[in-house]
Length: 289
Image (tube, rainbow, N blue to C red; front, top):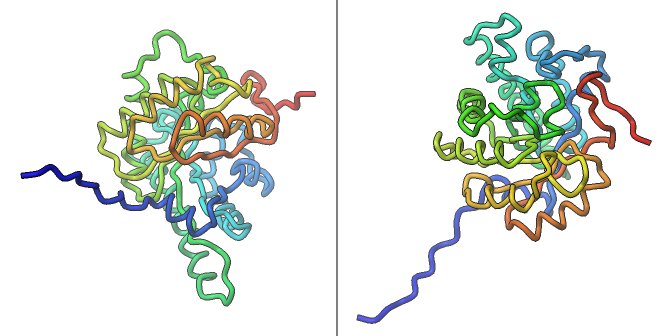
């Protein structure tokens, strides 16, 4: 018998890859959710931030999703960035209601997407894509609401296992709610990136995920660790097809895209902020001159 090289069949296209092909190589993510809520008069200066509207005004959340879809968003991100089980529990919400609120964040986005698509898909000359819904999973620092998602310092007692335990149940609930994607956002250090990767593996999550980092200097993660080291952890995971940068000044983005392309073959996701800097003590964005 001779030896024959067997070429494996190409892997099936992911939802992200299909969307990118339909969108001509570059898909558009929606914009600042809290900013748009505030435009409509929502008062969200609260540790729950935009997730407060999941309790007080879910109709407004759906309205904002529809506005971004109308504006051409190919991906809409749920209002669950600051929605954590400990955060809800601290407000006197039961664990059952807290999990229901997480599910609501996905349901509102899916309903908005489906209603919008039903409206436009039959239009002559329709140029919209059927959008994907990404369930937002904010960093541990976002839950702390002390600005540590922009410093990367969680304290010496925060271990890999503690971060996995923090994210685990929220990840399970959001995944069970049926989003198209999972979006880990504003990750400030290598340890939390590793926690996300290991958790996806342990929970056998099949929903495509992205992991996005913040950056305060345009060169490294907020912790000071190199993005190359952070990406090395993620590159080992087949459950994370995309990586990127979010909530960082726009002037950093072009250089970081180039660097990320050197360090990973994964898809690149970017959605910067307006260029302001978050003051964790004053709880507001500051304009740097």
